[in-house]
Length: 425
Image 1 (cartoon, rainbow, N blue to C red):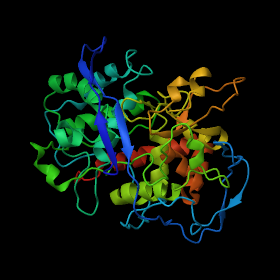
Image 2 (image 1 turned 135 degrees about the vertical axis):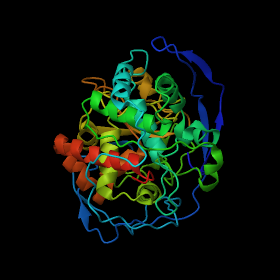
Image 3 (image 1 turned 180 degrees about the horizontal axis):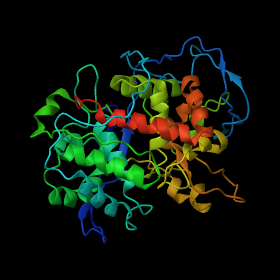
Image 4 (image 1 turned 90 degrees about the horizontal axis):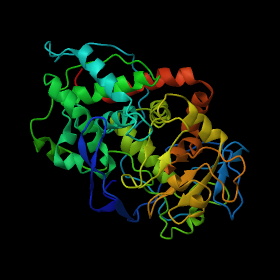
């Protein structure tokens, strides 16, 4: 969470993994108090005339179908929310094409047997004791979050350094639960002490992607670990994306539908959230809109959210341990309902795993009262849905929904770029 949220952790629970015999503290539940954003939002896409935003819903419903009709959208139109957002920071979208995959690194340790480490990591990947039976998703998240702190203007952050080993970066609530990933990798580090933590975390994500049918990415070694926490003086929280930042807040978990715009089916203030994801997070790193969509479509096909960590609940896709374009396709094709913690009807319909923690909202692919032909439980964060609501994002979303091979290629290139930011390669 960025500074716009307060978090009060509850006690942790000590857990023993039966496969690896690693003990770890299960991430503590959190109670989040969202503060009101103080400024009004403006879109970075002024001048857009029309785009395919097929949102169909009645004013009394929180359900939206994303493939029904075309509507006009004006970035200057009021969102209906006084907190509609956005940061005073301005960035320009990079215009250069996505980089190509290459290998080699300036600080490669010749004593490291990377093939042996790859083989060791492959042995870790399938683990029936963890989530959906695979550690690949949490290794991918560890690599993403360690890399996603990069700031192009100052040159700080990024995967180089493995700062999450230290208290301040590990305590960022957006990193909740990643202590588990680090614990599972610790025996590999002990067996191969020559490899830096920074390199190990990224290599583990690459092996995880390959093991689950994702892109095969050339690994470039040479990251150097921070020796202590002095690097943090140039860092800050809020560099990682927040799922609801600048959206109109809701205070009543039993009435999240009131935060929906009845005319468009979008969440009030979504433009501010879009500006946060685009400008405050990805443009800050040097990414463009295509790379943003490629990363989210490829990365969020893996794993699930946990209410006791992020505060959100459930998997994005039906098969969260293998690469696909299901995230993009389902976002466009499925019917999505906005829910909060108070939507207990989810429990009665066999979808209790999709009910977020108090104070949080998310979309689910379930409809209240519809139990026939019930789809597998899936969810989308508000920060996911902006890909369907924003015209620039949506044009890439539609490409990836139709073309899994294109997504696999673009995600591989962009994930490599993400994990090498700030490394000096």
